[in-house]
Amino acid sequence: MPVCPDCKRDVPANQVVCQSCGAALDPRPHIDGDPVVVLHATSQEEATSAQAALEAEGIPAYVAPPGVGVFADESDIEVVVSADLADDAVAILNAPPLSDEEFAAAAAQSGSDE
Image (cartoon, rainbow, N blue to C red; front, side):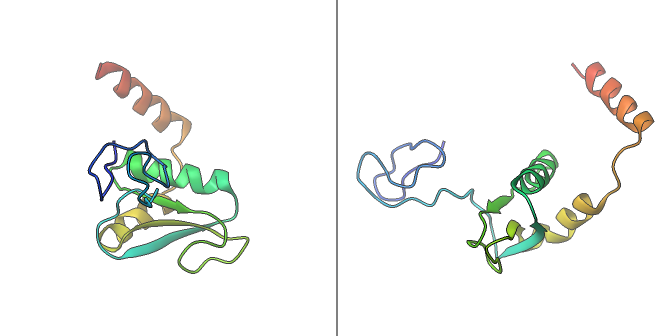
């Protein structure tokens, strides 16, 4: 759970104001290093899917709403990661989708891990 930088109390994720002390909070996940845009998505679904794929591989990602990101215009939704993870993030996002056989093998492997 995130912590208020002023009063150090736990705050719910995505809060913009600390309920304990009134401090302004940054609802974005913490990204170490300089932020780099790895995807200019054209829909919220595309951005959310990319964020989930990156986070599943251990890469923290942030989806900037339209017009709010680093280089965004009103129709652009940016997916942002730390600069030191940008190359890995781009490789993950550009990887071809799994074939039906690869998907079945991955699902079988996942089921055997339990």
